[in-house]
Length: 253
Ligand SMILES: O=P(O)(O)O[C@H]1O[C@H](CO)[C@@H](O)[C@H]1O
Ligand SMILES: O=c1cc[nH]c(=O)[nH]1
Image 1 (cartoon, rainbow, N blue to C red):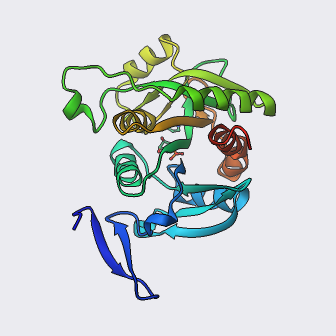
Image 2 (image 1 turned 135 degrees about the vertical axis):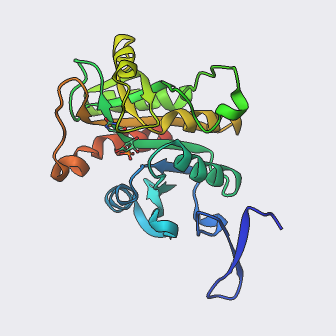
């Protein structure tokens, strides 16, 4: 038996496969997966944008849903906060469930003056101090890079919607409460658009497994101005990001 898989009894009497962290049958997860850090954003996005939605995961409360967008199957699975958490879900989604296109839909902190609250950032690449893949990269400074076809389609979708959007480099940090302000200063100085905590490892895993990946982010707070979206506005401001991600996955839909 594949050690990554555990058997669980299904009510219909057949064996259903699940991984350690995802309690879905293999066929329950689509090849296209959207990945918010927040499991409740997964629920909101699935209920708001997909049809024929069903919940496919609640292990550890990390909710996942599968439905359809314009007739195309899509899974929206929470990935948690930080690269070690995302790495668990993305490894299982790719290796055990056959995910091929993975798009992070996350919040981020703005790092440039022209990047405003609620703007969307499409991450061409992500700079990082370290990722869970550091152990195999060793002395190599691997450059995590978005899939070009997804990036191009996302930019077109954002332009068509008229969403204020920035395309460029972001910073995937391991810490939210950073005790090294000098690092952020260097990121700002080198034109990094925003900071979040997962995209670099998503891009590295996609490269390793020959999948497509992209991160589409909404600016929820700003490191230069100290502004932040009120919690009441966070979800409603995230709609453009979700639609851009869906349109990027299915540009002809
Ligand atoms: O809004 P999500 O997708 O969780 O992303 C950002 O928010 C969390 C920190 O508050 C980190 O996961 C960061 O990457
Ligand atoms: O990681 C994150 C996410 C949102 N805002 C930040 O400042 N950092």
